[in-house]
Amino acid sequence: MSTGTLLAIIIPVVVVVALLSVAITLFVGRRRRLRERFGPEYERTVESADSRLAGERELRAREKRHDSLDIKPLPSSSRERYSRDWAGVQDEFVDRPEEAVHDADRLVTSLMHERGYPTEGFEQQLKDLSVEHSRTLEHYRDAHEVDALGTRHKATTEQLRGAMVHYRALFDELLSNGGQARQARA
Image (tube, rainbow, N blue to C red; front, side, top):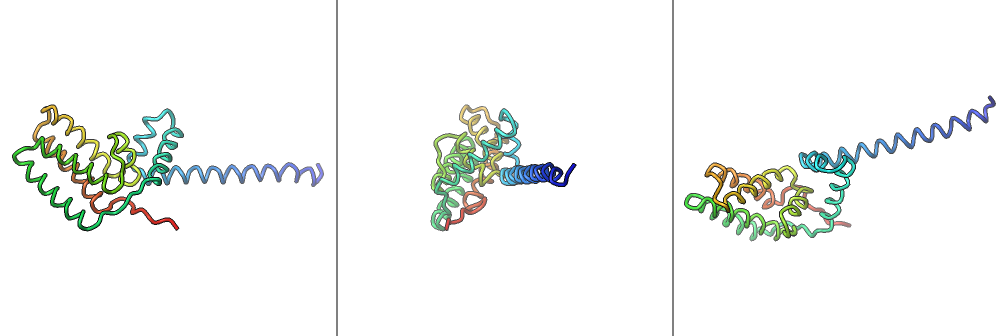
């Protein structure tokens, strides 16, 4: 074989291998970034999807939607008001635990709304929160489930106490502008 023929074979092979290597690196990097950002929510979403790619597509769609939201930090006066309101909900728990858990749910929803999160439905709230608050999302799920039980008077006092702890985890993160603070775009 002549040198020209060898080069005509080797160069395209090298280019294809290089392109495949770049594509794989980008693919693996994107998957790692999604895993880091979404934490346990990554696995939950991927497991519930038809495929890993479909789950990852869902997570990227959540990021895109989240980027379009006007999430903002709370002014200190609002943080103080929410802190007082939370203290009131905790005090209420002693005498009326079911109502306190329900009030905690409403307070978290109100705080989400004031921060700029849409509050049109629980499943959408979970998706929107998952982008910046994935580490506390399971707390919210658990608390919401107990709140539903409490509404039907089927929750134990221990479950209700646990729900308060779960709501508090998300509440504290939202109150302190938790997650990753949204940066102004240049």
